[in-house]
Image 1: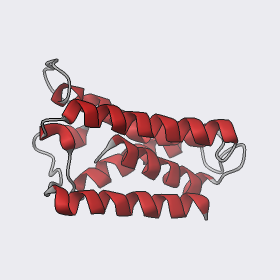
Image 2: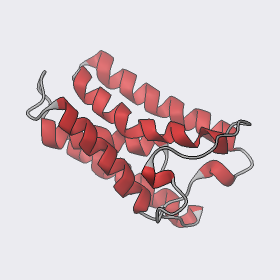
Image 3: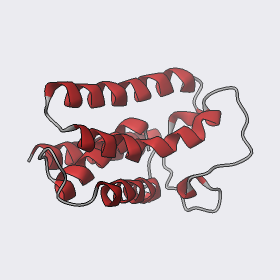
Image 4: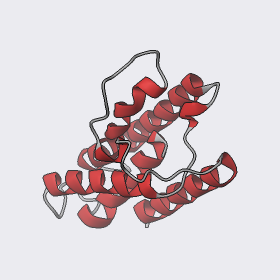
Length: 146
C-alpha cells in the first residue's frame, strides 16, 4: 500500500486505541507496535503499488509528500496531538524498506516482514487497487474524526 494509506491507518489505530487526548490511553510503545502490525495486515490486502510503473519516482515523491503534509497539518493545527502523528508516521515508516524499487539504489534485502518475498503481499491491478486504498483512507479518516 502507499505511504499515505499507511499514515492514515496509523493515525486511525492511534485515535481508536489511544484516544485524542494529550497523552495516550495505552502505552505509546504498544500503540507503535500495533501500528506496525496494521502495516503488515494492510500489505496482505490486494492493492496496487506504483513501484512497477514508468513514473514511479514521481508517484513516490507525491505519495511521501502527501503523507508528510497530512502529518504536518495534523500536528501544527492541533487536530491531533504529537504522539498520534508519531504513531501514524511509524505505521508508514516500513515503506522506506522498498525505496530501492523507486530509486536507482540496490539493497541486499528487505527488513520489514511484509516486504519479504515469502510474505503473501496482496496485489491487484490499478482499477481495483486504487479504490481499495481510497476506501482504507476513507475508513481511517472516519475513525480518526469520529
